[in-house]
Image 1 (tube, rainbow, N blue to C red):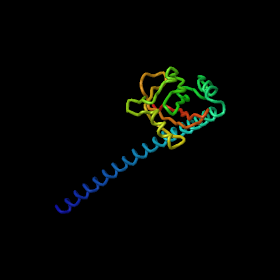
Image 2: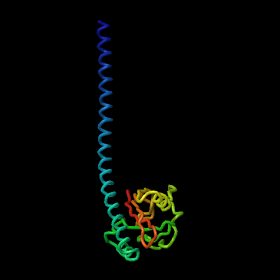
Image 3: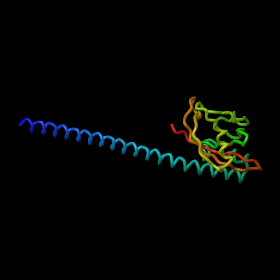
Image 4: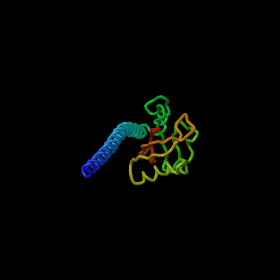
Length: 178
């Protein structure tokens, strides 16, 4: 009789242990499933923003080619336009890092930003120039002050090389991720 009750006791312990393991595994599965769903929604949002940015920058590059920098830049500076809306705007640098167009910070136009870096040490203009030495376009994430703010935010930027008036320019735009 004692042997039967010991077997019953161990069987119950075994069943409880298996049940506990299954509950824990189910919990991990549900948590992982939910986090993947969130990542997918976030990724879809980023993909849509990325598509908008590439289209905007590609069209800005074409406008620079067609109308030249002076005429294109006057279009890019217009507030609440296709080119400058909310926190999104077109910027242009030359290959020496000189800011040619930066609508929310026009006071920086004509200045070198080659040594400009964010709080994490990313020399973002230099990174764009270096990247475009071997490619025609690219993406960069760095910290930058969002218009209307005093603190840096994470910015995802698409940029590309364009030639105008015999000079190679870097035209780009970005979105703030936070």
